[in-house]
Length: 481
Image 1 (cartoon, rainbow, N blue to C red):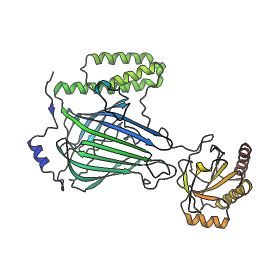
Image 2: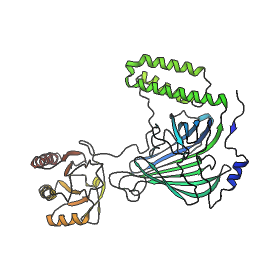
Image 3: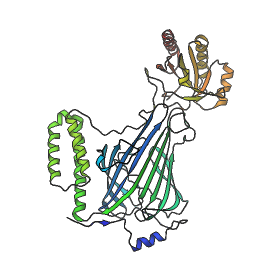
Image 4: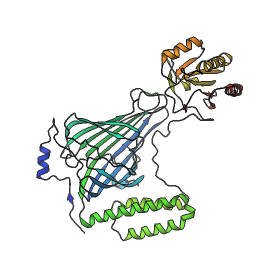
């Protein structure tokens, strides 16, 4: 057995000279992702999250460990294996001790390919880093770098499917663990971060990275994610991740092969398990055989940290055989996701601007009598007829029903002009931000809520039948109220 490991983070004379030339004002390096086959990066740190809103008051933290082993590398790409362990801490205020080490809440192993600039290639199973709760696979220490040399205050953008661009800036250099690192700050946020919409959350992510100039990976990483609830100006959720590179070791010969073989076994085991778990009863014999085979193979293999992934799959299969679904689920502190309007359920709350007055209206404060939400497009030929109907509803049932016009376009001038011409007797709110939560694929749409805010009618389209249906349901609700 080998007794010596090569410490990759130890700097030779050439590296030391290169570091010396990194200036505080002008960073002259053309930084790349430079690792070698059999090199393993080990990151450890802490993830904390908290929710502070009227609905949720919660705090939680996890110890996080993420290993990244270089399975193979060439001039353009590197094949990597990443193992992430999450261990929930019972007391976030105190540091964990060796005697109180908690079991892993989550264990996940993935292999993928990364190019020489730190960009992860398509076709992987990593998914996106989580915005709510810790990521079950953490790879944020890999930074997609620009192709050119970077200097202080230089900026570049990175893209992510389905999310806003992330803007990176070089803010200078700082010493971390004896290494003079290049400090990068990446900011990513929804377009409505400064002015939140009524029907969806807004979020902002800030990554501060102290980049190792030789390896092109984070020596230290701090990530903050803030989330605002719909129509709220202050963040209701906040999470912080802090990771540091603890070791960077090159494993020679058999030590590397032991790790590589265990990763391969764990990956194959998981794939085989996935093919059986859809029909447990049908494949119970095959599952039991698979467990025995893998346990037998594991006994003759040298144990490495990647054994945790094998143990996790075995526990999962054994629980499946018992009739228990033990898939790893990390529930975010928000505990709830954004609602959508559904019959028989509480209508999503919102705060919307009154387009006829200088005030805002909150739906929840109108409870106590039925509410008729009339979603319409002021530019539609049907809009005058719909407003006339809503006007009649307000006149005939105003004591027991609150009628609200909900314009799906954000144009106060058009709305006011039409409202004055129609001499309407109800308020018109800006409903342009409620498309997702109220399913506004087309208009007109009328939603009737009872006195407790429960959706009793969700009516799309317009005609005589529509009006009759609304009148009938409204009468039933008024009688109940």
